[in-house]
Amino acid sequence: MSIVHYPFKRPRTLNPEPRTLNPGPWTLDPEPWTLKNMQTGLERIFDHHMEWLRGKRVGLIVNPASVDMCWQHAADLFARRTEFQLTALFGPQHGIRGETQDNMIEWEGWPKDSRLGVPVYSLYGKTRKPTPEMLRDVDVLVFDVPDVGTRVYTFIYTMALGMQAAREKGIPFVVLDRPNPINGRDMEGPILNPAFASFVGMYPIPMRHGMTVGELARFFNEACGIGCELLVAPLAGWTRATWIDKTWLPWVMPSPNMPTLETATVYPGMVMFEGTQVSEGRGTTRPFEIIGAPYINPYRLADHLNGLQLPGVHFRPTFFQPTFHKFVGQICGGVQVHILNRASLRSFQIAVEILKAIHAFHPDDFQWKQPPYEYVEDKLPFDVIVGNDVLRRQIEENLPWEEISATWQDDMEAFIETRRDYLLYE
Image (cartoon, rainbow, N blue to C red; front, side, top):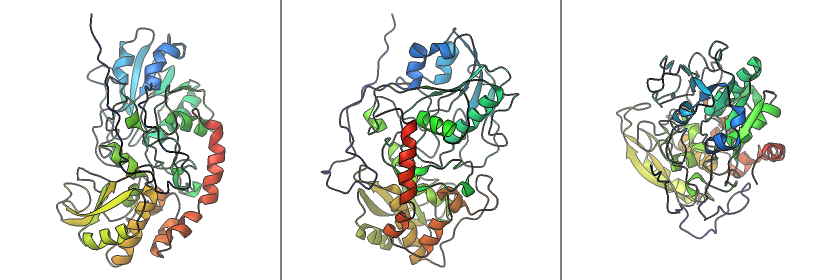
């Protein structure tokens, strides 16, 4: 008899100091301190929703982080089942195995998975939506890809396009729900202006959206009009305040530049540096936590930012030399964002203040990145990432944070009210 050892992790926290800092306008209450015995949709599909798959040919959208509590990959689990047949695998950006590094790479993947012998199709590159030919031998399309809680992360739009393709073929689309790793209550940043819609922002949600992939699928399907036959296998044992390290679900890099939960925590704001000629830390071991450029004085920048006394964060002056991407091989000065209290930290405000400081200190050196970005040819990449062209001008004018954030407060309140109809968890 074989014995399966289930992983156990001692509860840990990134919040050593007392919770006296202002948690921000859209926080409800402190995160729980108890370990959650949570189950994802992947764990629950076979025991609770097998009727959705039984006797059918199944297509599966996955990436390297599509694992269960014991690190078993969804593709392997699906391939072992005899109640249905796994007939196709689909990979989002960076591929099923995480084999591609950067944006805008026309990698079409391998024709077959060497391990399982199943056809493999890339949904990032020239083709982002499953074609009728790809779905020829598929009766139900299943999505099991983790999100990181930020609007610009492309996996949720691979899901949306898969939903569209399923509707067009007249087959069900199944989402195996997974937790929002940075909790499901905190929201930050502006709502996407539809005029700036792209593959890094297709629908009007805030930069940090506070929803699970299953909840987003419901929102996309009904509020945004996709209208497919949607089935969501819900989580068990997860609450909105729970961060992923409070569960037994292991952290597997969902993409090459998302190595840790700390990276995901700062990503909703720090991703905006992709739209500038300042390094966002790609080519280092701490992408999005480290930013800089050759012309930046790190001590001046860190002193200014720490003087703002932003909650939950410390800025450490640093030098680094990227091994690829912007400023490869050059010595850059900048700061590393150190998380002191993730409950009060607001990454979007942090990134705005860093951008304002660099623009003010180095007006002749700082530059916005030029098009294209994610195949958008006619707009600045920064505007595409942010979802509007207002914030860029506010940064150039060095407006105070209170004035900047006020511009999207009404939209945020309206979104909070709208999303209530699509939430699955208290």
